[in-house]
Amino acid sequence: MRQIRQLGCGAALLACCLALQAQAADFRVGELIVAQPWSRATPPVATVGAVYFSLTNSGSKADRLTAISSPIARQVEIHESREVQGMIQMRALTFVDCPPGTTVRSEPGGLHVMLVGLTRPLTPGMEFPMSLTFQSSRIVKVMVMVTVK
Image (tube, rainbow, N blue to C red; front, side, top):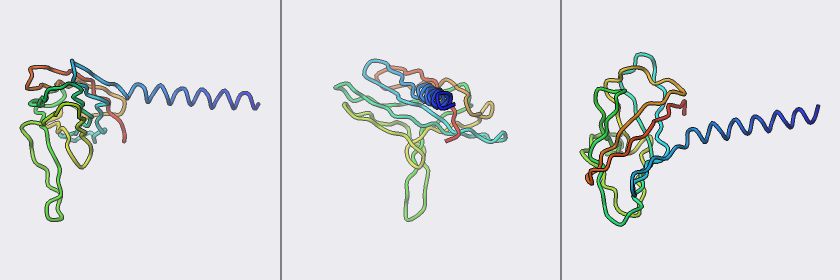
């Protein structure tokens, strides 16, 4: 009985590791790395969603994220949330600077991508494509994992 429990725990641990590995995807073009793009699931009637990721420029030259697109939404925008006089305000950005040797993080309550006019609800476990275009003319194509975080 004890061996069965240990085997059951080992199998559960392996399943958790595989699930985390599936979510921990990194996408690279040249020196630009987009790590772990994810989105929260949305209610069935939602028309907007958000995407988060880390963006690393491991090169020696600055670059700039200038556009994002995805077939899952009519429009995709880069936004930033900031606290101004005790109130949270969200504003659209036209670009995000990517200095050499740095990582820019998008996360809830800060820099993020808004999906406007969703073509379908975002459900846990689904994936959808997104393309990030940079001033250097590089395009990083990623797959976004939808979670229940």
